[in-house]
Image 1 (cartoon, rainbow, N blue to C red):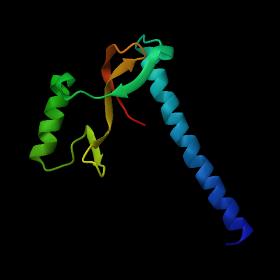
Image 2 (image 1 turned 30 degrees about the horizontal axis):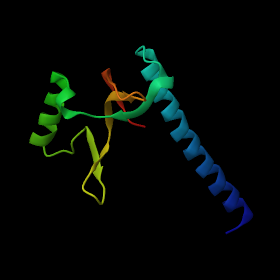
Image 3 (image 1 turned 90 degrees about the vertical axis):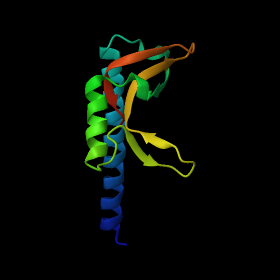
Length: 106
């Protein structure tokens, strides 16, 4: 690999990392815009029972059309799905707060 190609690959990797970090910052800003103190948030999560009526319809329509579930991502080795949407935050004290509207995972 030539030095120019190495430099180009390095720049691409840094831009991908920057895009990932900006998406995470957007997520935190959206949580803060919902009136949640972000210093108290420990994790994000998804509870299917907290889907709105519209979100349940989106999930049902995707299943009928044999499209992927819009709320579950790829399945990992352990059989768990990657979370594509967050609809609650768990605080450091163990309490949860529902996110309305739900937020896309970065």
